[in-house]
Amino acid sequence: MKSLFKSKPKTPAEVVRHTRDLLIFADRGGAEVKESKREEKMVELSKHIRELKHILYGDSESEPVSDACTQLTQEIFKENTFRLLIICLPKLNLEARKDATQVVANLQRQQVQSKLIASDYLEKNLDLMDILITGYENTDLALHYGAMSRECIRHQCVARYVLESQHMKKFFDYMQLQHFDIAADAAATFKELLTRHKSTVAEFLSKNYDWFFPAYNSKLLESQNYLTRRQAVKMLGDILLDRSNSSVMMRYVSSRDNLRILMNLLRESSKSIQFEAFHVFKLFVANQNKPPDIVSILITNKSKLLRLFADFKSDREDEQFEADKAQVVREITALEPGEQA
Image (cartoon, rainbow, N blue to C red):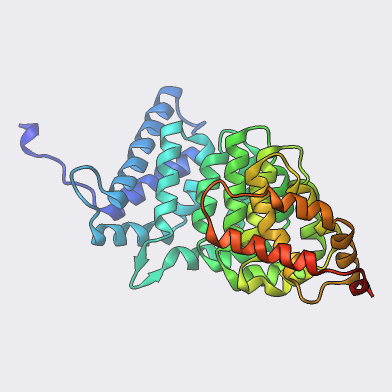
């Protein structure tokens, strides 16, 4: 007879509420119950988190239902279930961590009445970013927290908070961690912070130029690690060539120390590093108001630079690169010692 009375499926709000109860249990450690009961509850929690993911993403047989996503989103931000998902991540098994990461990521894009309520929630709970960013210091959690961080940075208020925090200085160490996948993930988050929100990034770079670029140069561009140098010079080009950062770019290309570093990168054996370094080096040459010491360095190294560019070719046909190179060669050729005055 029992099979005739199937239990009614839970609504998305009910799934969230049950998940919240189980997360509270996990957060407290479940010390008050027997080990077998605790394991049972943790298995149940994993199933509920997977159910949240299915509601938000759908599955192979069905697309997500917008009303269900809205209900879930409203409920999850209502009573701090979102916070619990983040702080309880270390208590979950690997599969549940993956599911929780996808849930947190998806919620950043869910709109309720045309509003991204994740943005409003995070603006009032910015301390969650402290947990996510310092997650890079835990090898078991780093990739999960890193993926969550990049999605949260979609919101300008969150990106601004991280940019203005002490976490930015830690990224230079995170990007050189021995675990390659974690270092690469940290670099992806760092790049997102420095490229997504143009006006916020320009303000950050202007205000923090004096510590940021010396650290960028010494820890990344002059790193002993080839991949770190390659990523860093490519990212530097992306930053300086962005119109929003024009005043920062002019300051960067007026420094003889910066020029020295870029000229060293031009001499690397790696074609890809040479190529990316060229795109930054050309900004020094194109500057119509070069300081005398920049002119002096270019003239002193004139013959070496012209020899270098004579053999300097892109791996693929690239008309823009050839045009830029020809312009750089013309500018350097035209430099005369009298211009140092």
